[in-house]
Image 1 (cartoon, rainbow, N blue to C red):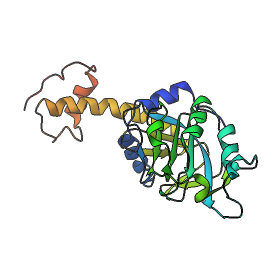
Image 2: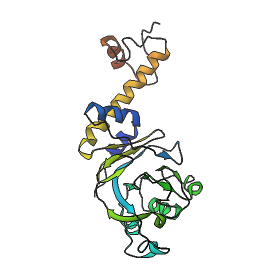
Image 3: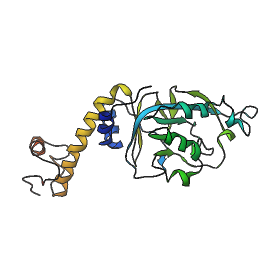
Image 4: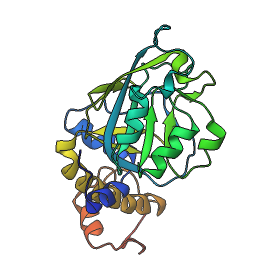
Length: 243
């Protein structure tokens, strides 16, 4: 598993989940926003990194008993120790929000190992502690029951479903305060480049609207608006504005 370059990470950091979703729809990819997850700590910088995945199946009582987490064969613990730095830890919890898919000690370990975030379509325990971390964690909410009460870790680093979205190992996972978006790895460079440019253009269009211009000819921009945009420097007042 390879990390992404600093330049690609920076380009994604200039984007928003809304912009990335739009650009993926433009390419025919409509199911890219992971459903039912929210950040435990909104307002952190964007989460960006390749996906490293863990898949849960329903627990079985003769295998997933109290203390089973300490078994060296436990794939959840193995995944925590081999997930590569720079990646986002994505867990398929089958949408079960009533059982904790992870807790604060394991999240701390991921943070110390250089992971860029955690996403799971299930519950999380120790949410107050985790919300104090500078590591983004997206989940379906708080859940007190421990992992083995409902989950069995069955696979590491395989395609999974998270919040109704297919996530392949190495896909780029982006999260902000609004949503988590999955970008296929082969589209990462073009999506990030186009997304950063789109964000810059939209900042200009906002200055146009705030100056009193009609959306007609501005959103989407006509030739005159494009010409003003090309002459614009961020922070400057857009020229030749009329209501």
